[in-house]
View 1 (spheres, rainbow, N blue to C red):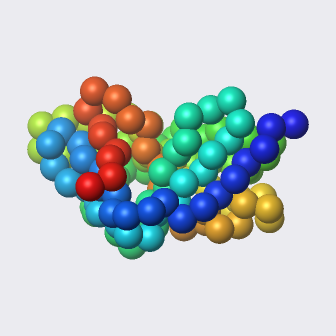
View 2: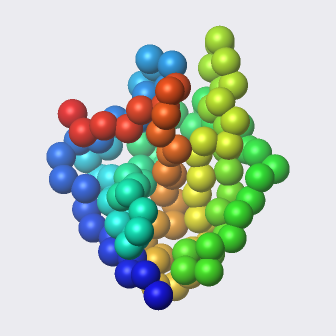
Length: 113
């Protein structure tokens, strides 16, 4: 079974969508799961959640638990199902509860500044 490590992501991290800053944090976590690229998780309080619209999509990870998804909605576009959160993660990964992660791509960027 693959290893999952969570550690504080050093420095300041920012997430942007369509050029707008959705959040900035010095309290981000990096989740490193063997076989996958590391993912930055942002504390919910550091994200402009007014731009997030709950989605009907959910997924299940045997290691992490059930993920709920959100779409990013701004004046010019809707980017569907690109934000996820483990509201009740498995006990071993409890520290990601209340954090949001983002699928990066054309319209969503996560970077260290």
